[in-house]
Picture 1 (cartoon, rainbow, N blue to C red):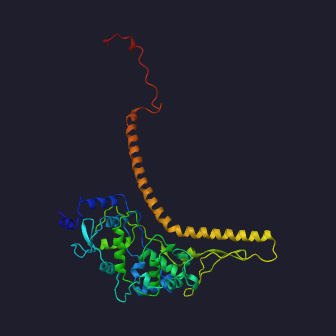
Picture 2 (cartoon, helix red, strand yellow):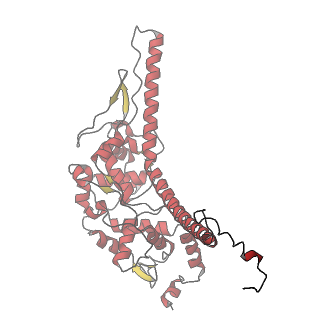
Picture 3 (cartoon, rainbow, N blue to C red):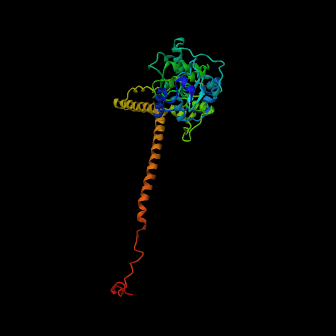
Length: 392
């Protein structure tokens, strides 16, 4: 008997449990992301490291715990919808594998080793001048009004691009990083100015909204945190549950490779060099405008130069597009590999079954001679063939 489950309406056989079990059975949300690990020694003089040090987010950046997708999906499938209701007897608790575990802002702070001292509340959009935010993030005076409906990742300064990768992976995760809303821009501006937020409350509200959303196709985030909280509270794993492989380590070289671009200067292909940390970076991700045709050149030569520059810019745009979709393609490839592995296991079982059947069919034929090495049968005695029956 589970009397506590009856009090919240979450019990085996209930309509709510059946609906959530369907979500778990079919694997929705269908993708589980992991925290990005950062090689912090490569960013020791970077804005990212200053934010980590100021906020005490060492464990957030290191992603120390493995992620178990099946466990995380069950956490979301059986999430307690009354977890933040003051009158609920299971406030700040949720049901995972036959037991109640605590999930609250305080538990998140304890897991990450955080404190709530020097927390500065995040301002609302109407409390902040977005023009100042845009100029700060883009590093130029003509950033406002925006040329696009949303803020663009490739328009940020280099240090803020790295910080945005960290924020969009481990703080306010999303799979859409190329463009973002004013709310994320305010969060990025807030952290870049070394203003600490209440991370435990922020993550708790993020997970609660994600777990209780009607859309079951949404991607699951904070898998490392949820796995760690479940395991540290005694939730057991099935023998078949395996952890996801660790996320790729993000270091300075990988960041530089993602930012390398080809621009046209004087008709030559030039790889833009990396700028030193601490500089005021211009908008160096925008493609360079075509150079004006030199005076006195033949029209055919000018057209050839313009066509060459156009081809370079088109190749640059395709490269940036491929880089932006690499994260999504990685998760898609991971899901496909998991499905292929399951199919291979089924195929191996079928092959073993067929081999056993063929082996059984070959047994009756094993007694028949397969060669003439035994020689012909002996000839009968001619004298014995003419004796009458019963004679000696």
